[in-house]
Structures are given as structure tokens and as C-alpha cells.
Length: 436
Image 1 (spheres, one colour):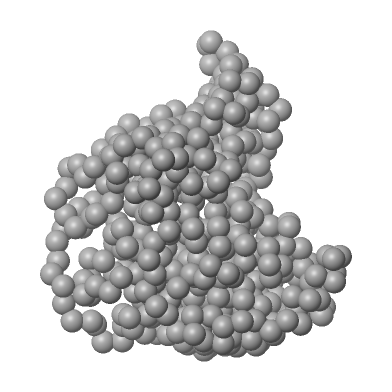
Image 2 (cartoon, rainbow, N blue to C red):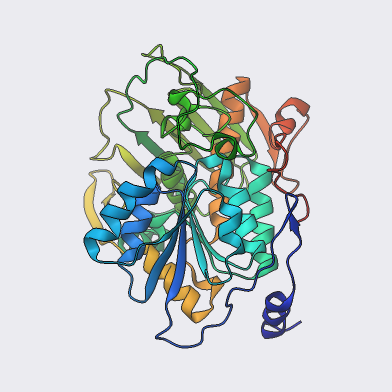
């Protein structure tokens, strides 16, 4: 089937039932003209959602028509800050994303929910005919990341993963130089996630605040009483909703490390971690060191080591949140989202460097206008693979043992307990479908 025929088929095919709700997608899949507006809905308007609004409202020819969040208390301040002060039309508001997907006039959705909603929200949006920008990590577990990749391929829409470092020209150049041999044969990368993450304390379960649609917020996660320490932002540190800092900040550096090494899934993962320093309600270990082995990469195999630390620590050649690549002829330090330096030979002679920023949101919009899903800088396949490395490391840390993994089968070798953790149980009707 030709690409154009396939797109026509996708455009004209009604979408199936999603979690018991039938949503038929009729959004535009080809662009009528350069002056048409790309109509966008923002799903999740706290945290990263605010950056999405800032980035998308700055794009030419983009109109944010709808805000969606389970916390109605956020609507007024977001509308005042991002719309009224700019003299923009007041957007519609929704508390249930399924109603957003039913809106035939919306071309794209921006997903900035807690992690446990990322894949399901993106899959539902794709089934409804929308282009999707989904925050990192694109999945809360390995299974649903694979399902999201399948959905992106099936529906042929533009899907951008929130790995904005991939849109920065300096880091694109850095990876090209690694591939061209600037530091020789690259054999190892170290990802650094040293972020200041304080004590969140302990809070009691309590009644659901007025204006919060908590059952919808829980979505796929197990039913559990409301607790403010498991809600806005601090959900990152709770197993049911987040992936700790390796899946929060760290997935960016994991993605760059894997990109620069030129590897995908490992054959072995060894992780060790626990809660140090604080006695609070975080569940995911706040200090973790993880090693991934890629024995078939390069001439003699490659290794990726990832460190998460939450508190007082040193930098490494200016990098606290970054990646260091080691090669036979030198090393390269990526010390921020945009900046890299190389050090060559035994004396560490300065080599190529760069510090340039791109526009990840513009890349997303440009691909929608051109109907070129394959031109996004952060393809969902890459996002899912980098997210999977975070998940594999967390499984090893949680089980406190080394694990062998079969990249071809996408499963652990001889460890049923670990394999079971690749796919969670979902709470109906918020179920990531086996058949997308």
C-alpha cells in the first residue's frame, strides 16, 4: 500500500471503541493552506503543561483552543496568565480528556499529565485522529511504551516525544561528531542526574479537595485515598504514578546517552538504590546507580552507567545534569541541554564545542503542517526506547538484583517476577489496549 493510500485509509476509517467510549476521529490529516491555524488542546496545565503553553502560544499560526485538567482550580490562573494578559481568546475548559478527543476541530493535543497517563492519553488521541506531543517519559512501563509506538505507526499521525534536547543544533552536532570519531571508538557513557530534591515530609490522607476530579486523576492506577503528597508534582516519587528522578529529569540524559552510544535495549541491567538522607513519603529510591551492558555494540561492546543523586554533590566537568562520553581518543561532556565540550588525548586538549538551542515545539508544528510524521526530531520509537531503559533500571533496583534481558523478545531471561513488572494491571475503564 502506498504512503498516500495508507494515509487516506487512516483518514477515512472510523476509530474503534476506547475504554468503553467510542471516539470517532475526523481531524484534518492534510493541511489546507499555510494560513490555517493549528488548533491545539493542552492536557495537563500544571508543571510541564505551563511550558507547553508558553512554547505553543509563541508559535505562528497556532491557537490553543482548549485547556484540560482534572483540577478545576488551575483554570482561572492559567487563563489569566497565558490568555488574558496576552489579549488572547479565552479557551474552553474540560476535566475529561475524552471530551477533548471528541472535538473534531482540534488538530493536536499536548500531553503533560502525570506519567501513568502519558501512553493511554496519547493512544486515545491517536485513535481519535489527533497529532500528539507527549511528555517524557512517554510511558510508565515497558508494555505501554510499545503499544504507543504501535499506535503511532498505525494511525500515521505526527507524534513528538518531549525530549527537547534532540532539537538543539549543538547536541545534534555533538552526536554527529561522536559518530564521526572525534573521541575515537566510543565505548561508554555516564548519565548524570544530580538534582536538588528536598524532603517532602509526611502528610495524612484527607478528603478530596473541591474542584479536583480525583478518580479521573487516578485513571489507570490502583484506587487509593487522596493524599496531597501524592498529588501535584510529588507524584513523581510514587510507584503508581511516577518513575522517580531517573524517569523525570533523568530520561532526558538517558536519551542523550543512548543516542550518542548508538544503542537500543541492553542485554543486562544491574541497579542498586535506596532512600538515603530523608525519612519522607517518597517511594522510589532517591539514590540509584544503574549499569546497562550492550555486548554486541561497537567493536567490543558498550556500557551505559546512570547515576541519580538528590542532594549535596560535586559536578563533573561542569556537568550535574548531563552526559559524559568516553572514547579511545578522548571524552565529551554534555553539561546542559545545549552545551558540549570535547577533551582530546592524555592531556585533555580542548576540542570541538557548541552551545546552541533549537525549538522543539516549532519542529512539532512544522511537521503537522507538512504532514511529515517522520521528520520529528524526537520520534516516539526513540522516546519509548529511552523510557524503557529507565523502567528496566527501576525494576532491577526494586528487585535488588541483576537481570538478563533479551532485546529481540523484549523480555527478561528466566525471571518471571521481573517479566511480570513489564506490564501492570490497569484499572478499568482506563486500560491501555493490547490491540491499539
